Image (cartoon, rainbow, N blue to C red; front, side, top):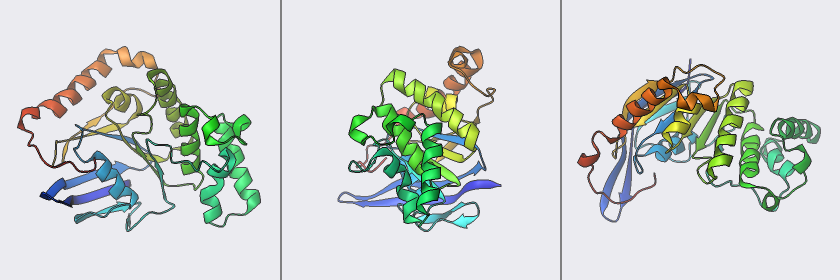
Length: 263
């Protein structure tokens, strides 16, 4: 079963310079419990597509479903993780994680069980009483992931979650995320500009065209799991990387200058 299915998605933005087509006739399927990455040149509509999956914006044309149910707005069945950590600065780590379940009227005892388990999984137990300002960037992002998982969503939607981290921290968080995914087996749709990151994380990579964004290709990632950073130096990894690069840049000279819109 496809956890996420998009059918003929088109999204048009109205700007002062006229209409801008961000996405055009986008169709894709992400199987249940799989890890999918979406890559493409800046401005190709990756984040727009993810926001449609999240129900934060509506498509101009087309439909999108999660586990067969139409997406008509944000819902607890989808957890969202952004590049900016979006943690509540006035809440401690544990309270940030428990925020979603509290909105769902989960009992205090059950909320504590949920947050305690996630704090342990995220290796953050000793920071349960800390405020976000007291954490490193990588730790903040782990809190954001824990908060998204606290609602027990069917799907995790991640928009450049490691984009603001330094290279060493980013590599550590990539490895950490694959471990969390293997443990929870949630469906993940992950937007990134980093092709190596996409290959390291994903079961499949969706390559998008320059605006208007379309799905140019779906590249299966047949590297064995669990993966290590030694895989980055393998001939197969390099082969996949070259294939994706060529797909992204093969029509680079054909791009048309258009008004800026959300990515």
